[in-house]
Length: 199
Image (cartoon, one colour):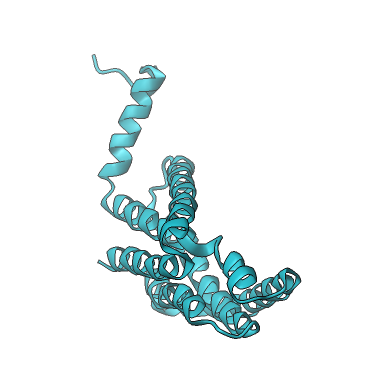
């Protein structure tokens, strides 16, 4: 007689669920592309402020202005991204806004004036406002109704791993090759993640 899933040992239940989760093609592919994407994002994101203060000669206090600019832009644009997502779909919104996110490290690489980050953070708010909205909604769309909370838990756990690996790699790389090459590397890895997502 076949055992029900609830009568199996916990380890066996977990193993069966992992097999089931990774058999979901859309979920698996989204997971892979998101891990690449998050490594690329975190590769350089924590180093922007270091570059601003140490290389551009900016004041650390100015960072609050940039953060406020980013937050205000995100709040203002969010409703419009929602409307576009309803018309064109979550994936298309993520791809379009993702190009802006890929561009961000390149903007930092080319930044020369201490107030140029205001422009960067306007782009940052516009791009991430759309991407984050689409990514969460898409995750809900591609996960099955049964055990959705566990699927989301797996996704967030693996994103946490990717987001822990990225800053470590970026920090070590910055010591070896410098900050600007890390910014370009971040753009390349972000672009790769977006391409895998598109495919």
